Length: 197
Image (cartoon, rainbow, N blue to C red; front, side, top):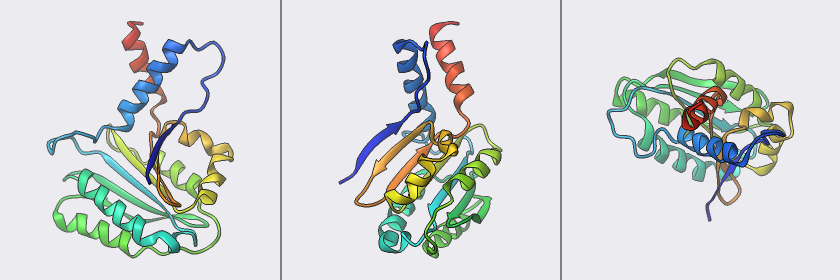
């Protein structure tokens, strides 16, 4: 059974409940630029960060099927796509622009060929690098964790702030996170505009 949740780090003392609710609402807006979008949307950065640890082996078919289905929903011509295998060290396994159906198929084949090794998943390294590769106004960052253990390492690290705005979908043993990278300033501007400040 699939469950969905939202991760938001505490905003600190002095924040009013009204502001907190607005920030949550704005985070959802920025985390979901693709839902309900038509085929005429502007090109975006699509970052796929997939668990490359040994945990992937047990759920590879399920994850691959789900990710390929998601790509069918979101990819459009002009998107810049980067795929990371987050094993002991995160590495880019695909990077390019979608100019044709052949480019989309190349991305899908790259994902089909993924394999896992090692005990850890370097999600922090991939997220840090993804945040520096923003060449479009919007990005869609999807992080796939093959096990709770591989995700807990980044959640308990100093880099946990990279997951500040995340929507989590829970599956049998794995998780899919839509991560809002570098949207703090946008969320605050949206909140200020909403309150007319």
